[in-house]
Image (cartoon, rainbow over the protein chains, first blue to last red):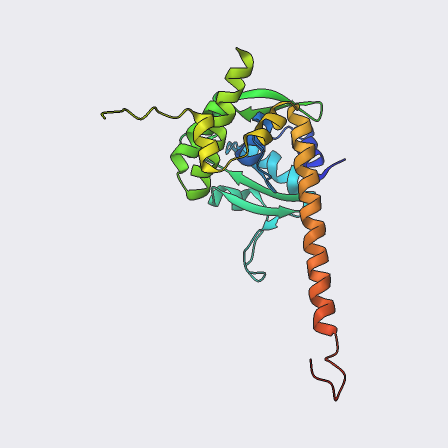
Length: 162
Length: 72
């Protein structure tokens, strides 16, 4: 099993409330940009945080790019105290976002998502239109570059349908 | 003289930006899962290159200089 497949399987099996966003969502919709991390928007409801902590715990989540001596404890309290976390795990990098630019929190992301089958499992993925909206709102250089590509993907998909 | 510039569509804009449209077309011919598998393949290749580069750097650092008496 590929690491991303394993990571998705774990999140789904443990019933974590999440929506796939970012590069993997772009790939799922047809982008050709390589991405190394899984970005998800997660639910900050207390029960959901508990599920997320329990699901990722065995993968030893640690802060990515932070000094090695910076204390980090993977628990509900830490998640409650922060919002967005860029993590490394034993199955690869994962970014947890409590809010997505141009979209909002988990409920908004869920409403702006669709079910796509990834590795034979139904996953909630931000729609292409919502992804475009989020890239436009984030407006960093890399988002603007990705935006140009995603808009082309949208156009090509609509041409294909017609 | 007063020619209006035609607005580029999204695909033309991407092409002008330097995006390889044929890559997008090839990606769109795949299923979402196939796209993720292809991404993982590219990542594995990038990791292999990085490992090879690190190995080469280590070898280069460990290479003794030119033999005494010889100048390069």
